[in-house]
Length: 597
Image 1 (cartoon, rainbow, N blue to C red):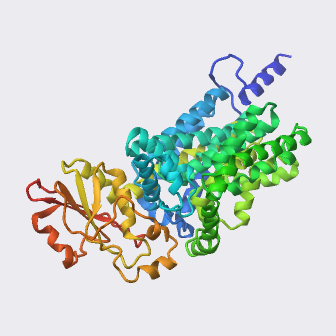
Image 2 (image 1 turned 90 degrees about the vertical axis):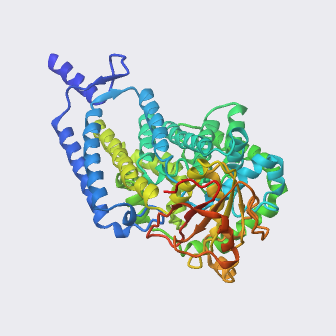
Image 3 (image 1 turned 90 degrees about the horizontal axis):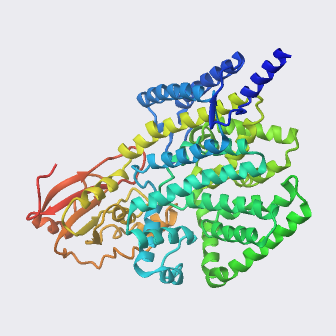
């Protein structure tokens, strides 16, 4: 009997059951085969890093390709830190933490991960578009923005919610990048928590925790957390709509229905691809287990009716703009983006940790084998996006939580619970190391967009309140060079204005605009920086020239502006990756100039 009791105690310890009531306890006895499996997983993780490096030419991601971010030195550092991290993870797997404590640590950790990317520059020219929208809201109010959205204010293919959030932040805190970063990182962490909640509702709390961790094992996602873009807000509202819809069809009461309907409306107003992602809600009557399917269908119908009522006014007022946007998406943007694509190999083997992708593939087998009907809920939107041929990692971002959920289900099929935890946590550690060592180093030190950030911070240190900008044309790129001015404004608390309309004077602009996958850079009206053709500088002005390289000469028509100005500082990081570059040169009035560096 004593032997049986001892064996049972060992089994309980292995399964992570805490009998003491303490938040965590140390497991003293772990089978040797578990330790051996953990060692093998560690070796696989290291071998995968080596394979990713050796075959990095297969990574054609347009932002963080391993071809650009990883070299031999960074690989060695990633390996060293990852191996050390795996040792720490190995030790942590023998400490049993209560599930409530664990998810608290995961969510808090996700916010810290997002904060680690705050020092990266805004790396997409799309940020300038949202900055203009937010500045218009802060300047003229939300009523003006909504009435002019799609008319006086170019909406491109954007829906308004993200701009409204950013505009509200500007209204409350001023044009503060920190405020936007705090909000977006909160939405990022909120997405992690909502992924946990969905996993908990579909399966159990442990699966939810693993799903939350799997979402953090996506290096591409880390650097997006604080960017002034629409993708992270869209991911947050999508997961919020899915979670609240699950609760609304499982629970009684009109309150859940109203919450679910409102969250769906918010999600639908963030991004058009969310409309596809919300297909997971449509399968609830067929996939939820332990529920009366008829009652679920009835409540889902009620949610749909309430949602439709809430959306009627939006579509009644703005349906011409929405139809126009859909036409742009179908007739222009989809064909244009075919020329600027990424591969699934790039996304799921490099930008997502391979453990996540492999677990997701394995989960498909186990879902069929076990007839796990609830699996359809996270898999539906993910499969639709893949079948549609949505290749770019950025456009798949909103369904990364679905990928994390199916991957967590796959990991849970491993019988050894300690091994489950080790695989998941190990994937997070390696992914975070890649982000900090390789991706962040590239964005901070090698990517031309950092010039705008550094120049903006430098301008803030100067006494002059006005910044006159000269933007030189870039005939080798299809991007409007003037599109970077709102991004420079985002970093600097100064009054910007343009002189010498050089950037848009090139006769080939119309031809470049027609074939550009970034046509919006030519069409979005820059409300605050319109050039009236004057070459007269306002008093108290710094003169800034934005050019594709440090050697480009100023046209004779505006070279005379430098008569009373002298060179002060240049920000000239040039990357070897993109045609579009932003070198920023600062000139100061002779009366104000201080020693240049």
